[in-house]
Each structure stands twice: as C-alpha cells, then as structure tokens.
Image (tube, rainbow, N blue to C red; front, side, top):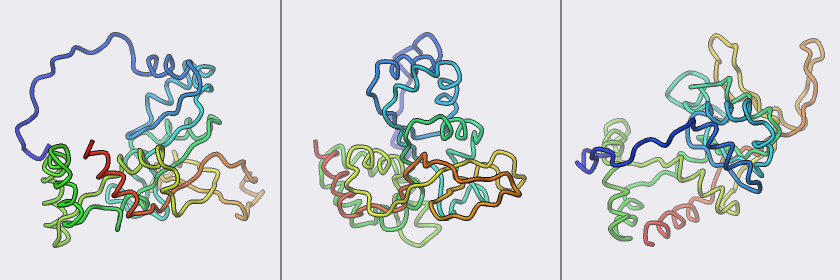
Length: 231
C-alpha cells in the first residue's frame, strides 16, 4: 500500500465455510457474471464440487494469460494462470463463456504515465489515494525504465466487464492451459479459427470457449478510471 501507514488490524472475522462453496451459492442464483483477478483455484474447486450451480453463471471475465507472451514471472506463463494451471484448465474447459483480458490489454499505453497519474490525483481524494498507495510500484517502474508508470490489470478487466465497448483488439479462440510442459507450464494456448490441426497428435478443431482481449481504447479506459475515482 505504498508505505502509507493506512493498514490496520482487521475488524471482521472470517465468515464460516469455504470460499468455493460461497461462490457456488451465489452462482446458483442464476444470471450472474463472475470477475476473477487472481489464480482460479477456488473457481475450479466450485466447479468440481457444485457443477450445476456453477453452470448458471452467465459469463466469466478473467484477468490472466498473455498473447504473445511478455511477462516477467516465467518464460511462458502469466502469474494468475501460472499459480494453478490445472485449475485454469478446468475453468476453460467447463463451458461457461469466458472473456480473457490478457497482459497485452493492460500494458503499454494502457498504463498510467506521469500525466495520467496527475490527472487521477486531481480527480479528488480517492484518486490521490489510488496513486499514492501504488507509489512503491511506480518507483520500481522508474528504477527499471527511467520513468514512473502504473499498470492496472485488475481495473482493466473490470472495465472490460462493465464497458465491453472499450475493447479494441480481440479474437475468439479455444483457449487451453499447458499443465505438463517442463518449460511451458501455465502457458495459455489459443487455437484460433483457421489453425492447422494434426491428427497425428490426436488434435482436432475445438469449439471456441473464450474471447481473448489484447487491446483497449486507452483514452476511454483512462476516462473510465477517472470517472470512477471522482464519484
């Protein structure tokens, strides 16, 4: 939290039960959309324990994966998928429609530069907190690249869910997750229409299970953020 000194001891006790069961209870109400911002372990566990309830989800938006790959954690895998690739493969093969917001959609010009961070600060108290609580991250970016910047992959995924009109680059695919590779464990593999398949490997065209987002309307995304923190 940027060493702001704002974190204190929790005042609430954990609710009883397991998160996967709670997730399934919400999903079982029907017509709900799920947004995931981390590893998919509990989602996969809910699918395994309560498949009928989880099939009532209308849609899942996932922050994760990369195409092509440019993540610092491993040679081939983005962090949220890398942590539990078996869980990710369970989710992608389950059948609920998925939108995957990749690292490409969140990086580059979608990151906040000095000017954008100042604009967020000017939006008010919440905007100032959002910038200041990330100052250790922006200073790391300055040390590594010479200029401060702030990547916001989780808000980008939320923006795609709330405002799909902000999507500028995407493609439909059958997404798989590598769970066995010695060097590629956790990689997201995108089989797109027109790919060649080789029967010698037991492969065949697979149905689309995801929309892979690789680019956003950057100006619109930033304005979406500024509007939220100005509330």
